[in-house]
Length: 474
View: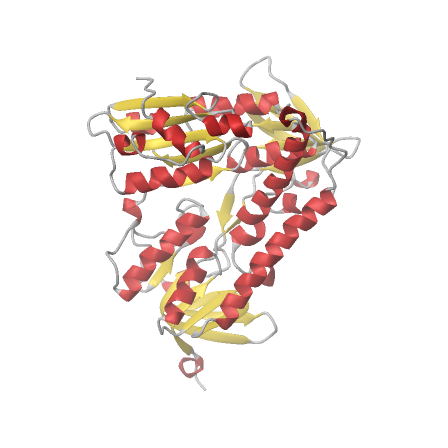
C-alpha cells in the first residue's frame, strides 16, 4: 500500500490539547466535522493551564492566602494560630485539583461524538499531513483539510554560568516541591516571579527577587509596580532592582550562591539561598514539529507566525494559543478558538486579533487586574488622557472595610476627547472579577459615565467604580 493510501483523512486535525485547540476540536466535531485531537503526554491532557500553569498555581496561591489570613485572624476578633505548613499536603491538594480537571477533560475528549482523541507525538510529514508516533506503540498518518497547531509553551531556559549545576526550579517544577525552601531566590520580577514570591513568603520561606530592570512587572505603569514592591517589602520579601545575575555556584551548605551586577555601586554583590527559581518566561514547543514540511518557517523565537485571523502562510494551517506568539493567557487562547472557528465554518462576523482588548490578572494579594492600555502606553499613542484614582481604604469602597482588605487602589485612564475608557489597573481584592465589567464596557464603547452612574449591588468592590470615575487626578 502506498503512502497516500495509508493516510487517514480528517476535516480537522488539532495538534495539542490546550484551551483553544481542544475547544475547537470538540465544537466542530459536534457540528459534523470529522476531527482528531492529538496529545503527546497523558499528564498534559487538557493543556498547560490545567496541568502546570493557571490551575495548580492559583490553587497554591489560595493555600498561601489561607496561611496569611490565619496570621491575621486576630484582626477579625478570631483567636487562631498558624502552627505550621504541611507542604506535602499543600501539594496533594494542588494535585487533586489538577487530577479533577484533567479527568474531566479526558472524559470530554473520549465521549464527544465525531472526535477521535489520539495519544502520541505528532510531526509534520507533508503540507497538511502529520505522522503520529502512538503512545502505546505503532504509528498513524493523518491528513486534515484544516490543521491547527496548538502545542503551547514550556519553561524557558537562560544561559548563565553555573546555573545548571544549581538545579534551578522552573514554573513547572516548583509546583511539585514537598518541602519548604529556607530561602528562595527568584530571578525575574514578572508575572511568575511575583506570584511565587508572595506565595512562598506566606508559606514561610525567606524570599529574594532579583530583577534586572528598574521595577517589578516591567510592562505596568511605575505607580502600579511601586505599589506591588511596597506591598511585598511589608511582607518581608527582599526586592533587588536594577540587578543582573552574572553567574551561579553551589554554596558549601548545599544551597546556591548568585553573583550579582547591580547598577547601584552600593548594591549587593552576592546573595545566597537554598533554592533558585528562574521566572523568565516560557518558550514555544515547536522544535519537534518539523513545520518546514508544511511550508512554514518559525520566527526568531521559535513561534509560529500567523495573521490577524490566526492563519499561517500555508492555507488551511492555523496556530492558536501560546504557540503563535500572542499574549500567553488561557482566555486569549479561547478567543483564538472563536476566530479560527469563524474562518473555518464561515459563520459569524469574522473576528480578528486586531479588535482585541487585552485583559489579564496577576494573582498576588491584593490582585492586580488589568484591561486595555496602561497610562504610559496611552500617552505614547498620543491620547489626551484623564486619570482617575481611588484608594481601597475609603468610604467609597465599603466592601473593603467589611472584608478588611483595604490595601491598594483603582486606576482608570480615559480619553479626554471621547470619554471612552482606554484602560484600567486595579490593585485591589477581587480585581480579576472587576476586569470583566471594564472589558465589557470597553468592547461596547461605553463612556466612563455609564459605569459611574451604574447601580451596583451594595456592598461590593464593584461599587467602587461609582467613586472611581469621580476621582480625577488630572
